[in-house]
Image (tube, rainbow, N blue to C red; front, side, top):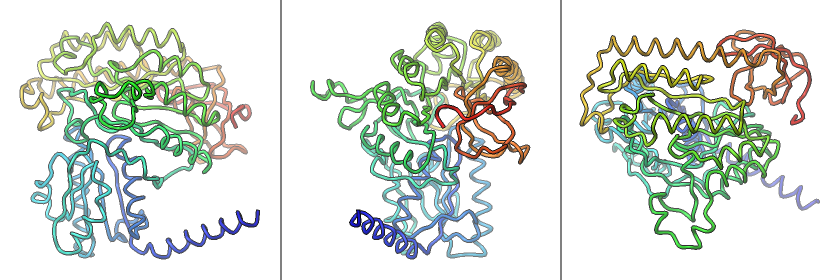
Length: 481
């Protein structure tokens, strides 16, 4: 016992020593998908070893990094506006260095250094381990860039620093890249081909999070259902694997079960799924384990078979219906959300009506709906004219949002009178006297604080709702608390 105590003291001393050495300050902002926020935690960990502590005050920073998204033009314009803000601060603090990370960095590459004069380094999603070398280049007065896409990098050996964490929920990245080549999407070009992370490193991260007091994880990837570990390498090369590798391969349903069994009281979510890759064994695994949430984010993008084909989506309207119906047979109360693109090239009123009728069939719990935004370098940008007028896009989008609000309200009303388990995540935005958390279906639940605290699992009886929020009263701790 004395030896263990001594070792712990040595560890504490080492941590204190490292903190003393970390005198430089890093300010990092993230935009876009959850993967970008997860990547920023990896970046913070890499730079902590280089003497950087994170700060939430831009003016105090020695190094400013913005982790960017390229999925829509609006996201890129948001980043450019932030760079204007950084420029204003840099005029006061000329020694401050500015870097651009992520998908926008990968897409624009050297052009970024030419367009944005204040940018000192440009780093793609697979090159974060090269940041120390790139910073050295900057210190020597040279612009630094690394946007080389990797066939192997998963950052499975990096322990993320949880940024702006509530200490309750965390992302765990399991795959990188995408092979699907949807015609509207830049992700395959900015994040490369699909490869999966070693399941053992995933389990180690999950166990570590539980030991640190976290209560919920989200297994994260551009397409989690494509997870396939056969010893490393790209998913597209799986056919070349040995018989032994194939016999011992770990699929997403296998990984989901491994995580559920490793920490039976840890709530587990996952995102994002692709209809063409989601299999019933995943749904059956969800039904088998109480700690896997009954919620699936299942982007459809359009309800029109013709438009789905133009998008190179590898599923039809009918196949999507079959998938939804099968999910609800196995998990009747499963929450389902969507992504929808409105005004894709050549979309007609008939195509639009097909999307509305698909929504009527599914009645999603909630969704993320956008007007089509042409992305440079995609097949749609190269081969298709963006021919749907902006006014038509706005009108169709408004109709889809209106219908989704109606369906969201329909779904939340189903909870009135029922008791749901809620994991408390934070104070309510509208009232300091109320907690906010989510139920299994990822619907926000608000209830009086009383004696409960962040991180508690609480049973809440629902008495009212809006289209986005359930209102209730706590009736005691849940069995998982």
